[in-house]
Length: 418
Image 1: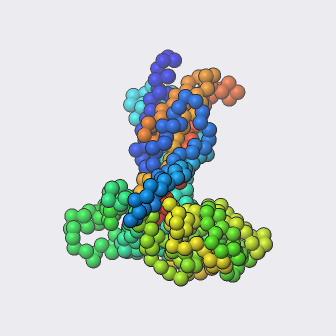
Image 2: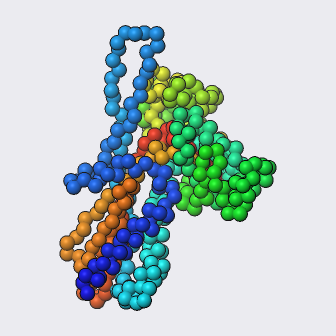
Image 3: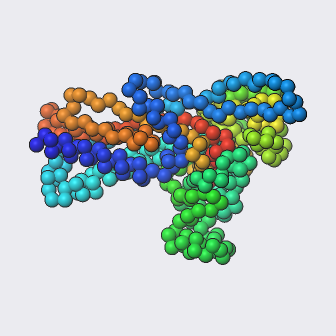
């Protein structure tokens, strides 16, 4: 009897992992290349430091050997997310012993549990991407309604930043309402007829502008900060790095995930180091990575990406900010104060990292089984134990995961929607 019960627990854990990894949509566009590091037999800690690509400056018309320093750029992945479903599962033993018991358990108990765990991963991944994507298109509070304003604009942003869009591995995640209205706009096109007709039969846009389209219910809903008046850089010119000192009004709020631009600070292509476009308000956009409320008239904002000026291996702007340069909240959005909207996403897999880790398997539990997907690192642990206080068999599903910022500066676009 014990062997049969163990086999059933084993089957439930294995089946649960299969259902989970095959139903994820946003998370698979996160790179999982470092998940294997968490499979080591020794603990590496909650936060893992991983390397990013080195960048160089080419010497032109100068054959003198001048060594360039290797500054070893890094990022980090933090395992800080957990998901648990706990239930009393004594009656399932009877279901497993009935004819077609596994099918009944899968449909009635297992699929719903995995669906909710899957949703937590999807929602947390969408939120992480929305809050850490610095490039932005669209207007917060307004749904885009054409290919040009969605996949077309996103592709332009990625291409201008040298994202490898030719890899044909791009994902576009938009609210279902946007998917619907953009699909309707396909009436204006006649070719390719097979693809267009398929859109109307399925209700989904399959592919456009190199993106695979997803009508996504997991997108993060963002509420913008509020500024009482002008917000500017401090009186110190040429600030750079991952934080900036600003001047505003006491009580001004800056939300995690808010997008800003700085007057006179324009975006440059990361390979050519030439300006993509120029505007007096500045075309380089940054995302605020930590919420701040000004207690006085001055404050410090943590931003991504860091500001790197001319001469740096990592140059991403044409000029460092001038003293007292004006900041713009949510460029492209009129009167953004307190605006609310979902944040769509255009992603290339190198933009963000995802990693999972196996949990401890308690020896005293009556039955414990854990399966880990070697590719993503995601692992589901199933523990079944007898609770003599309530005379019931208890069952719990657990998993843990975390995220990190990769090449989001050039491989991720936030799409402001309603």
